[in-house]
Structures are given as C-alpha cells and as structure tokens.
Amino acid sequence: MMGKRFSERGICPRFRRKSRGFTLLEVMVAMSVFAVMAAAMTTATQRNSQYAGRLEEKSIGHWIAMNKMAELQGKGKWPKLGSKTEDVEMARREWLVTTLVEARESDNFRLIQVDVSLKTGHIGGDGRRVSRLKSLMTNMELKE
Image (cartoon, rainbow, N blue to C red):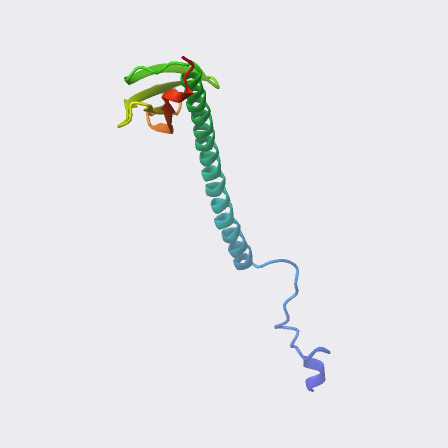
C-alpha cells in the first residue's frame, strides 16, 4: 500500500533529507563570497589610508606656503627678484620651499610664487610639489 511507503508529507523516507547543517557546496560558496568581500574591504582601506597621508602632506605644504607668503608681505619692503630655495622643518618632516619673485609689466607689482615639496630622502619624500601659492604684491602696500 502507498500509505505505508510514504510519510505524512508525501515524501519517501528514503529520499527525505534531514537538515543537520550546511552542505559542503554551501559552505564553499559562503567562504568565497566572504573572501571576495574581505579583499575588497582591504583594498578600500589601504587606498583610504594613502589618500589620508597625501591630504596631510598637501595641508602642511599649503600651511608652509602661506607662512612664507605672510613673511614676505610682512617685511614691508620689496622682495629681491629671482629664485631662492630653503629648507624648512615642520610636522617632523623636512620641506623644500622655493620662492620665485618676478617683476610685472607695471613697476608697482611683483609676482610672488611659493612652491613647497617634501624633501627627497625623507620618508615619503620624492621631491614632488605638494603646494603652490601665488600672489601679487603692490608697491602701495609698503610702508615708506
């Protein structure tokens, strides 16, 4: 009789699967999904830390450039024409500050350009410019 071969649900006891856990295939799929997600998270975290370091360099470099510009404008006299490079230490790093002063068409103006780069040989320093600041200085600003 059919009633004896099949259980109440209509499934043959021989083919009924007892749920005691996950199959090997399910575990392998779950582990591969987790591995892909972990690799993506690691890459994103590494990239984020690199961007944070670069942003710190640019911020400090801009701060140095603004300080140099304020120093030149606060002297009260025309800066000498030409280029000058000097070493500056800030935030436990050494920086190269290059100041370029150029004459303009009018005798009342001078262009001041300050470039800041992390000194080569320092940790993370490859000589690339991290900040550039330009300003026009007028003769009328000076105290005579």
